[in-house]
Image: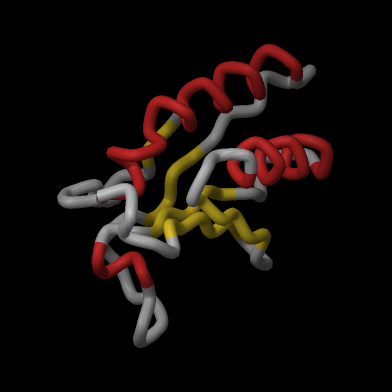
Length: 105
């Protein structure tokens, strides 16, 4: 898994919670894709997001989709959505994932 330069995971609770899962998803993705597709983490707690974004409190991450096939995007969405307490949503340029509850922390 790549992490885009400038991405901050400082106090990023969602990465602490599912970081290992993301690496496992990435490993499977690279093994099953013909061109060795790889996840790229593009946003953590830094950057500009919506007013009430969960990024600001360390409860959301973004993953780039432009480097992934449609099949791989579907795999990633399904794999992340199978993690208890995590929601993954495909947006126009990325997959946004977040934890909606603080019960895990």
